[in-house]
Image 1 (cartoon, rainbow, N blue to C red):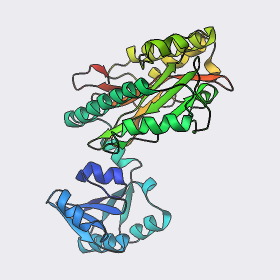
Image 2 (image 1 turned 30 degrees about the vertical axis):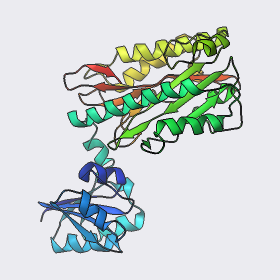
Image 3 (image 1 turned 90 degrees about the vertical axis):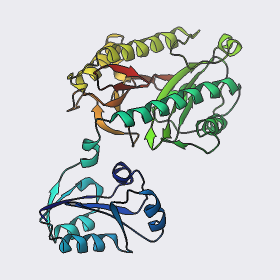
Length: 343
């Protein structure tokens, strides 16, 4: 055999097999496909993966992979060097020529199929519904821990759905921390509540952020996850409006062929012109799919251009330390007809 491909991350296994485990190697040698795993997973693997993929049980996955590579006389092995520890990488390189391709699987799946896009749409839909249900039950004086507990109960549909990531729930000054950790801080009327969460459907992620006004009149009307939010504090309203403007302008700029760093630039310049450029401290977005963070990159150094089938977030933010933060995030799908769809 001339060449082969080897993968070992769960997301990579899922992309190839529609099933994964935390200890497996996928090996494709010509027309032969193998999943090497240990005895904890072989029965389930045989029940779930395509029949054309042979399940090979082994206590030493690298040793078994080496045996197969030698058996089929593989001369070149495509491998993602970022997915293996140095010892594993060296052992594979001892018996064949390695062709390193960083982020191989992410590059392969950067543009989604129509079926994958449907899974992502459904994930985003169920995620939106969970946000709305949660805001119907929120009560004043709940701690962030309580808020997060109740939120996850709804997001997961009491354990029936998997989270894309651990949700971010941040109140007032904690919302100025982009990846805030939970505290005993209580939510009071008139404060900001920032929610960032996602779920999985058929293995595909969603991701969404809303910054909620809990001004007293909003409590009376009912908290809403709409992007139309009103704040009695003029500074909060100014910052919120600026972040929303940056997001909408960036989404308007998305067209097939446009460099994604230019989309980031649109949002960044909008916020800078509003006087808060120093407080937008992260990239504009990231790809979403089997993993919550995958290609394409959406930041000032992105090498990617907009392509049909891409899915990525647009999530500008302004974070004023010790005061509050605002982030608004939606996922966008670039359809196979070139249209931009907010999900």
